[in-house]
Image (cartoon, rainbow, N blue to C red; front, side, top):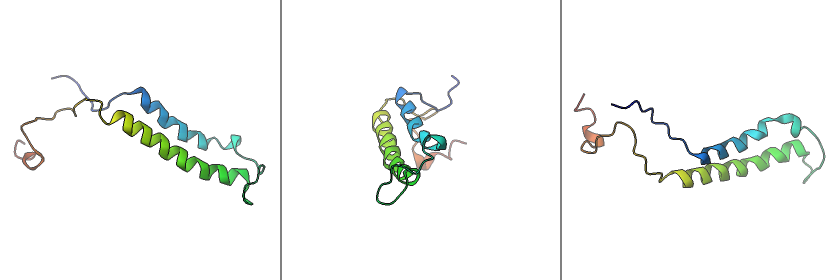
Amino acid sequence: MADRSGLRWSPWNLLLLVPLLMLVTPWFNSKEPVVWGMPFFYWSQFLWVPVGVVCVLVVYLKTKDDGVPAPDVDPEVDDLDEGARR
């Protein structure tokens, strides 16, 4: 039996690193420019929420049908019979 971990690599997964850029606070630690009375530090954090959602959505859509079956799945055993073979 091959050693499979269940993790699947795709270059699209690198897009999930983009939302982590919001954690680099020295880049965003400033008051100017002000938008609707909010300093840059606060409104830039609000801006990262849709950026993160879009990144996760793109990665999901690009990797959901990669054709790799889950490891150790027996096609003749359904979810209800999973405990019967143990």
